[in-house]
Amino acid sequence: MDTLDMSVDVAIIGGVGFSALSEECKKIVNTPYGAVRVYFSDVDGRTVAMIPRHYWTDEHTPPHLINYRANIWAARDIGASRIISTNSVGSMKGHSIGSFFLPDDFIDFTRNRVSTFFDNNTVHVDMTEPYCSQIRGCLASTLRKKGVEYSEGVYACTEGPRFETRAEIAMMSMFSDVVGMTGVPEVILAREMELCYASICTVTNHACGMGDEKLTTDELVKELAVKQDALLEILSETIRYLPSERDCDCSSATSGARL
Ligand SMILES: [Zn+2]
Image (spheres, rainbow, N blue to C red):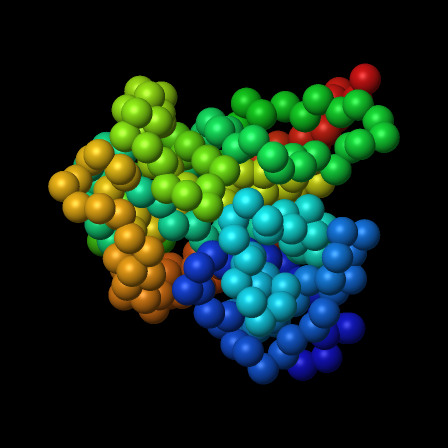
């Protein structure tokens, strides 16, 4: 596959434990924010790019240091107008471990991340519907068709890399359903670029204070490994049935947003 001639339709930003659909075709995409590794695969004639969120090098980058702007810039640069991200989350509402979660809104509890591309002019991007309705609909319909347990709701994003305290979870659970460390600012940056963006999260654990056990990364990684094949199948099928035309408001997200 010649990456230079490819017309990329969808980019997947993969989280911890997520492998590329194929590792054969890799390209380094240079952006103003740094270089990004991108892997290309073919899904029923559509070129899909996979960006491993945590890996610009062979070392795993923690959530608070991920170069979110580089990843989103790279997706746009290779021509992807749509992004599906995979994230792992802790449940604050008793979701089954191993079930899937589609965020329809988010609350940002991060502190030290750059969450905009607009440093030299003022753009107040609308966030009424942060996640693309068309991709979310396709993901939900794939999950229903496959009879896979999933739910929808509000994603709370924390700074990390530490897990949350009991008090933080008690507070966040009043306004949100799951908690993770990587969904923001990705969703904001994609919106600023007028790209369609939706996320499919794997529920890997119950949040602090929601279970009896101490939280460990072992249980998180173990659950992600169990779900890896199912997730790849869901993504492939969603991409297969995603209409080629965008039927949502994402492409005009910044109209009327500039001061
Ligand atoms: Zn959209």
